[in-house]
Image (tube, rainbow, N blue to C red):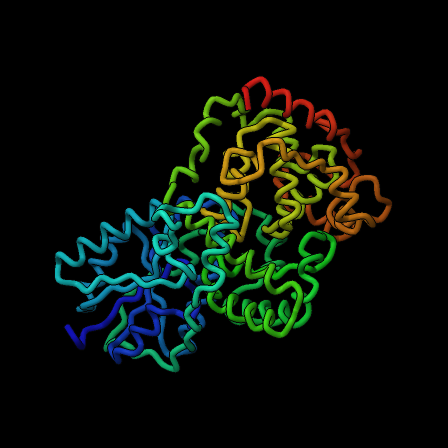
Length: 472
C-alpha cells in the first residue's frame, strides 16, 4: 500500500498552490490520480454556478496536463465511482479537501467510513477555510452568534503560510479512462446567457492571483470607501475564485496582512471581509438549518409571501421594480453573474422588507444566477438582510434604496451602466442585459422604465406595520 497510487478527489479546490492534500500526496512520491466526480451535488447546482464550475474544471484539467498529469472525470454516485477507480488503479488512498455544508459532510463521512472499512487510507484535509469551524469557541465553549466577537477571537490567530505548488506529480503506469467534460452538458441551463456572462469571468488560479495582486497594489488603500461604491472598481472580486478554490483564503489573508503592515488603510477591512466568510461557515457548521429555515425561530410565524411567481417578485427577478438601485443590481447579476456587495444588501432588503417576500425565494434566485455562489455566504447574507438571521441590529433596519443610490452612486455611473430604458444612447453593458435574459420575458431596451411596484417610503411603512403586528 505504501507505493500504491493516491486518488486525489478535487471538488471546490481547483488550484495547485497552497493545496494541503495535493502537497501531501506529491510529497509521498507515489503516483497521484486527480479525479473530479459529477455527482448529485454537482447535478443539483443552479445554472450559473454549474456553468462556472464547468469552466473551472476544464481550466484546471489543462493546468494538470501542463504538469504532466491529468484530471480524470467520472459521473455517478461518489462512493461508487471511487470504488471503481480503486479497483481499476490499485490505489491505496483517497484524499480530498473538506467541505462543510451538511450534504457534503454527510456524503464525505459515509465515504470515509466505507473506504476505511475496506482498508483504504481515506483522509480529508483543510484548505477551504482558515479556521476549522469547530476550533473557534466562546469562553464558555459554545459557538459565536455575532460577528464582532468572532472577529475579535480569530484576528490574532496564526494562519498557516501558503505552500507552493508541486513541481511535478508522479503519474500511474496507466491512466484510467474518464468522461469528456462536454458530455456532461453543465452549461445547458445558461442558454444564450453563457456568451454574455463569459467575458466577465476571471478563470483559474493565475487569474485569481493577478486579481489579488492588482487589488493589493491599486485598490486596497482606498477599500474602506470604494467597497461601497458600485460604480467604481473598488472591490477585490475574489469571491468568484474563492468559491471554487482557485485561490485559498490563506493566500488572501497573508497578502492582506502584508498590506496592513505596510500601512494601507483598507487592508484590515479586507481581512474582516475574509473573516465574515469564515463566520458564515462557522454558523453553517453549528446551525445547519441556516441554509433552509429561519435562523431565529421566532420568525417562523411571520407571514412572508411565498409565491415565487407573484407579479412583484417577477418584477424583482427581471430588474423591473421601478427602483433604480434594485434594478441596476439585478441586471448586473444577469449580465456578469455577480453583484456588488452594496447592491446585494439593497435588493435583499427590498425583496424581504418592501415586498415582504420570503428570503428563501431570493436565496434560490441567487443560487441559480451567481457564478460566485457559496452556500454559507448566500444563506447568511439573505438571513442577515431579512432580519431572521445572525445580526445584532434589530429587524427594523430597512434600507431606503432611493437614498442609498444618492449616497453611493450620486453621479449615476452604476445606474447608467445597467439600465437602458429612457436613455437616448444606453451603454453596451445595459443593452447586453437584453441579450442575456430569456426571450420569453419579452423585454426591450426601448420599453418605458416602470413605475415603482412598491415606492421606497411606502415599503418601509408596510414592513414596520407587519413587524409590529407580529410583536417584533
